[in-house]
Image (cartoon, rainbow, N blue to C red; front, side):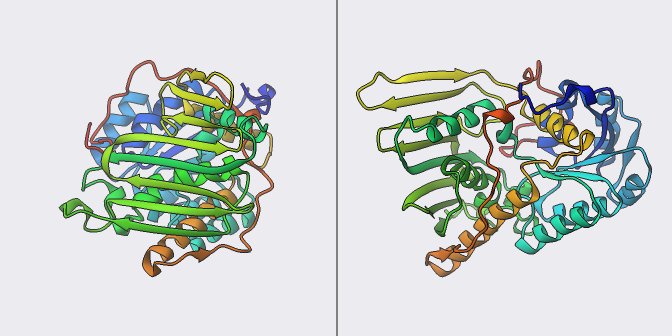
Length: 379
């Protein structure tokens, strides 16, 4: 476990409201509180009365609210923080309202739909002296953090290019398939590839190019079936990725260096045995499998520790903002058919490392889902 968590503060728990009871909230976030020793689930927010009643019953929650009652919840004095698991276009409004009420915010990625929204969220957090963190769960998960250590240690030589694929079958009714919800292949799953390239290369891209295609299926009327991108990093390094809502489930990335390469799969899974294959010239391949862990418990533990001990959380709003700047530049590239410059994009001082690793046991059993289905439609 990371040495950043100060056990002396665990005599008090941060009280959370989970805002939005979709698939990910129910499947991953709500059950994670059982393993997050400094965090407590005390309230739920949803406009679905069945969800509010049945999910509250499962977790023994007394306080439930509709979206219209959100400000009442914020003023109730019963919570310290909100975990926002709403469709992307709602992130900014619900973050700003919480910040103005003095409530800390843990917001799912992508942070928002536009750069202006991200900047508004960051300003609201600063002006109201609350903590804002974007829930990049892989910033606390060993397989990806060890990958960073392998690359930055020079084991594969100078890293030259990064390639990733991320695909899944996604149902038309899912919010990821709705343009008005801020959905899309790059926004909802491509962001994992973008963020991984950034922490692997320990840098920000200076220009990007992207293209997207769709077949004739009705479900792809609002968002593209598939997108591919090229990210040009300083030092003439390239990151490429393809993401799809219409192909079989897969997530992986490979980092090629001057002396070898590292392959990670399934790179972006929530709970899975993740495998590293390290190939160095002249040496036998090294394979290592990482056991699954509760990634959301790690996120809650870390954010609660930041609140309890008045530490600035990472990944911060600035981390989320940079990904949105890249996503918007990719969208511009798709529209114009040209490379889009990101010259002048701010360089982050903080990058995730193995010191952020937090390990908690995986879920013992899959939780019962109430009126919620995964993106592929499996309830």
